[in-house]
Image 1 (cartoon, rainbow, N blue to C red):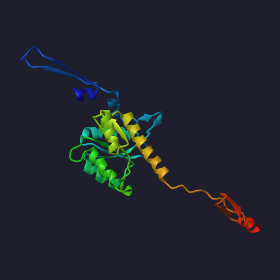
Image 2 (image 1 turned 90 degrees about the vertical axis):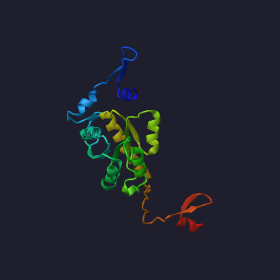
Image 3 (image 1 turned 90 degrees about the horizontal axis):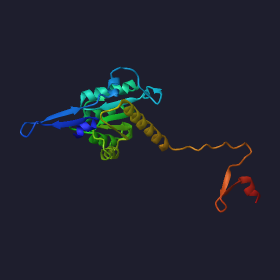
Image 4 (image 1 turned 180 degrees about the vertical axis):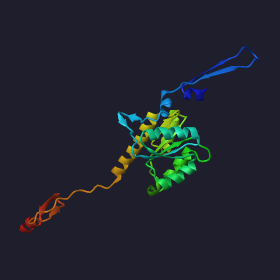
Length: 219
């Protein structure tokens, strides 16, 4: 029942009587977005066509159909997508290819999404340790979102994946990482050049003001 509800569907149970078995009817909606994934046309976000243009995305999911759908969604937004079907393969690709962002499924065998992001964050920055990441999972409760963010992901996207949400979260993760990197860079103060006849200022600690060397000698 929970799985059906996550996909926006309903489930009904009926039985002709005791000892005669039961019938379960599951109804799932056909999402308009799912149909649009296959038409090949570019996606726009807030009026911007191909909002991920130029971004290199590493997508990983052990389900090949879901992985292919994500690849199509991201490429329609302008991204260059590399795919992996396991956490270990994704880790090797991340170190070698240094993508701009990682989009990873959580529920993978062997090395799941939590284990993957833990190993990514353990890497040196030069090897991709600060790569922004988006978690993709069918578990979309507040607890699941908090766990993904606390593990090291910047954003969380629930399944079934919607193209616009995936594009928005991917773009937001990259922008946040770039802004963080910009604020970490040391600031260099601009110093005005001195005039030919000007002496460098001398700071008087007691009065906390500057005076020129010439005026100091006059006193």
